[in-house]
Length: 169
Image 1 (cartoon, rainbow, N blue to C red):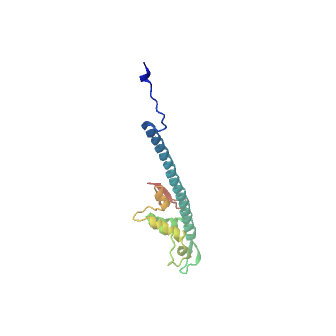
Image 2 (cartoon, rainbow, N blue to C red):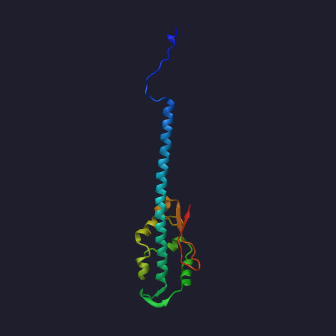
Image 3 (cartoon, rainbow, N blue to C red):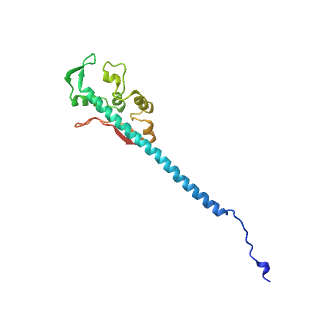
């Protein structure tokens, strides 16, 4: 009597539509998390390099100050005269843009002054900054662009040395 109402079971190992959608959603979420982690790693690496570049430029500014405390004659030889920090501050602050202040650090082969001729940062570093800094008074490098930041060389304040500020865009 009831034999025609037997349940029919399939013996199938295939995914149902709902299982397939659920699996694809999980894979998508995991992919997004992995991509986010890789992306944050690259940004963090750029920030580390940018901090190192900031340190290099700060050291170059200190070197510029120290090299310019001694007055040189027309032949580039040091004299017994010494410049005060306030007179150097006046020279530095007389250059009103970051680009002009950065150029104090760049090697100038035409100069008779050995410090200016050699520069306070190497030519490769200077060229790298100049390549990425175009049409703006913000100082860029590849790492700074990758971390959405830039450098400025603000006005030199009393009681310290000139500084390099890192600014978020």
